[in-house]
Length: 373
Image: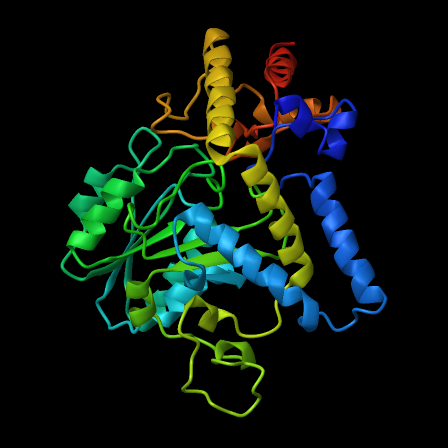
């Protein structure tokens, strides 16, 4: 699929809107919108009870996510959002006073509050201070203690665009028997994650950003190792093996990650995610990753040629699709661009652009023209 063909999948590209804000909330494609419309129409007519026909979509979505992550389908479960997923691991571990969690000071609050909340249980939570707007494996290694039980990091940081070296951090944690947790909402599906290669124990990702799905749908991955250590902090009827046998059997947990699904799922959201994943696989994951990196590299180059200070790491090993930069009167410029139908973000006093694979060089040029007008 060419970029021109991909652009035709999105209603918003038919006008003059330049949307470079996928790190916030992504637009919906025609096929995602239509898939949800078909689901809701069926629910409104004769398919009022969805369970007899929706479970195939649920399973196919698990399988597509497993392929995306290089995992097994039984290691994938669905949640409401990224925070919901991270709270599963935060509340599911048997903590002891003095246990240690290691975070960093670049994180979005979703990857902070679930762990800071553990202080009431006597858990120590430290946040590494970033150097040059990024966190390195060496920094993590220096702050690991003998009581460190968990390290959590975003694959790509929302504010700086820095991409973590998951493989090196995962090996570091595995060698020390530390649970390695990843917030992947700013990197999937366009930046490859291999949960086995990267020794990831637990991963959470929402669907409304780069996944181009909808709000209120997210997913987690839990390794076999993690499933041995994380007990569900809450149970529901679908946490139990053979959930449609409605006898009370609280000790018979489902064998895989689905034990963390405690009730009826967001089937409309799952339908959206199912459709968006099909679209990504049709476009090609490696092709999507290359397109995003090319656009980000182009934007960084053009910003620097205009003397604009880019804080996102320059080498593409260390960044992904988010480009964050300093700009005078950033708030006023952000508002002016918005009025000109050029949509980016204002984050922590900086401007942030996040092009997806279907964006074009012409749209990057329009952003630069709008900034330098």
